[in-house]
Length: 247
Length: 244
Image (cartoon, rainbow over all chains, first blue to last red; front, side, top):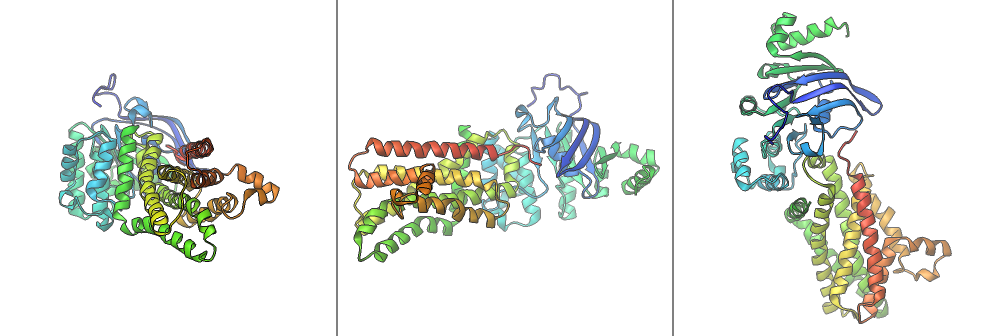
């Protein structure tokens, strides 16, 4: 997946051109233009219902009724040639709860043409090696979320789309995951991580603030604070909302 | 495609392996029902001889219809299908994987039931046993493909279960097992001509009565397989990479 002719340093990992999404007769994303840098942890931050999940589904290419153009690694989102290059973790852990942790990883490993060594490496990376033989149904919510994450990490995809991966996790583990995200970005991956926790924005290299399907901000966290004169991302969010004159 | 198919078949069988009770029921219930039919018609042994093999062949259709529709519904609702659709996985490979996994189960199920029927209950089968098992597997595939296709129209497990009486029971009534098709009201006879189970039943009757794999059996089997392929095609059409 490193064989990217024309996907040099300067090319955005993900770009949106006039993208709108309709769901059930309602417009969930409104005419969005974005250009997201590669090799960074990009936070998609916004309250629940702001369109984070829809945006992520559109990037992965599983969202229907998308107008405009989304490109991932210089190919249309969801292109057959890009399947496998975009790791995707849905909000609810999408794993087979009636299988063991190891069986889940082996199955997806075979689909992704990943060897046994990679399965072992990934199990270690999410600290689940000792749970290998446990059925997912018998694990806690946080552990299930990590199984789901592990599957996305199996083939070390250049783009990772993680929908609220830290929800409900204990702070120690959450901290650990954010460090892991940073490490993955340093290694060259582009991570899109959604969260409704404004504090988590501080762990990102780049931010997209979403509200009601509109992009409030698309910049680095420092730029955001400088521009709004706020001291926290939450304050910045509030000041941007009042700036737009909406309630 | 083959990688997806074999990986998925293994995964489906692993899931069943963890669910011992389901496996026990899949393998045991058909035999119990067969014993029930045998002794319920104690005074009229001809009924058991006439319906025994068709019943053995139809059980896999019913069980695989239910297992497949619930399995695919769970796949849709748990988000694993969405995950698979975002991977380099072909729909055909996925469906083929399901087919292979369930064919293995159907093969064991039919063999167990057939053994109980022939060895314990004294069922006479004129045709070769392997052909009876082959028709049973074909029926399982038919049930599976109908279940997979219909599961797309079920939002809940309750709805999926109701598809059994809605789609399988009428075929069961009209296939000729309960009453000869020629004795039915003409419109029902015509309808039965296009129902897949009719051909599965005809094939089983032929295997029960004729010592050789006659061209009639092979023709019925061929029609049954063609309808399975059609249902699988419908199933593949319901697997959407992009969902609203």
